[in-house]
Length: 59
Image 1 (cartoon, rainbow, N blue to C red):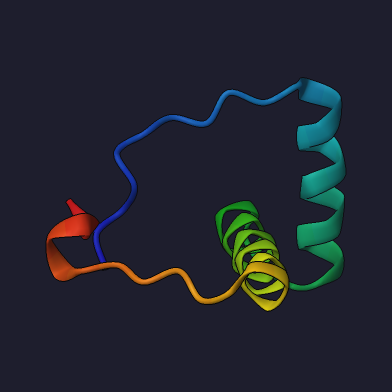
Image 2: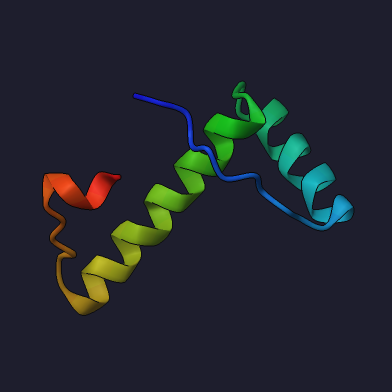
């Protein structure tokens, strides 16, 4: 999978908390963010239904 070309702008104190969580879970910060986003999408889909995307939506 190709890396996301979009930079993440985030409050420094929140980044420190993410770094703590990532270290605690044995993950990189990038992987920790990915896990949290996947969890948020799953929760959203549970409440609102599945989000369908076509292959062309990945660009």
